[in-house]
Length: 255
Image (cartoon, rainbow, N blue to C red; front, side):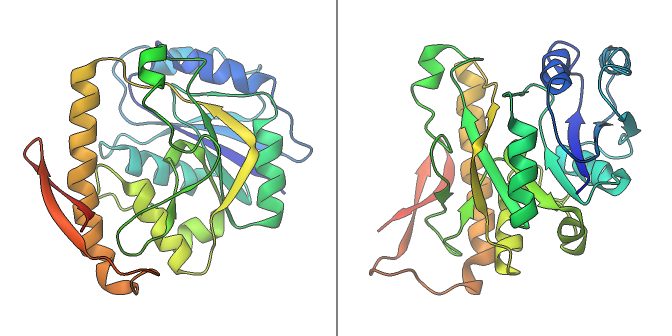
């Protein structure tokens, strides 16, 4: 199996070297490549990436500047890829040793996978204390369609599946990864948790940015609930969704 590592990238000159350094030591028995999808960076990101050519096999930069947004950059990277499967990584993440091999092994058996997240190495302990998502298991959304979801920088998928499903929805600025998780599972591709693969995730440290991000996620979760609500039956147990307002944003809670 050929693997393609897709890194959407925008003005990441301060962090992308850490990401690429972690890939230098990755090993996979088959052929693999790294594609940096440059989403219109105006800093020295491309120069930093270019300095790794010769250190990382089959490293390429593709132009993804026609439209701003992670979803468009990822889609562009996947279209340019030659791998049978693609694995995603953000330009401020640091994949742990063995990440590529574990993701590749999982994708030999499954069409759609997600790795573990580690928050400890790259973040302040105070920020880490409130983040438990995807550290030891996948999480399920508690509104229709009640399916598993995973962070975009932890996903791996057969390239044909990604393309056949239309890739990420570029109309979604946020939670395009969650939306894709739903699409894939509803199309018959269960999300497998590749627990032996670990990606070190860099979190936002500014409390105002953290609050703004959480508020935005709440709003987009409402959007996805409306999009998928009619596609799935209620889960076991009797409960109904109820709206509440948090920070001026409508979200869903159990009622």
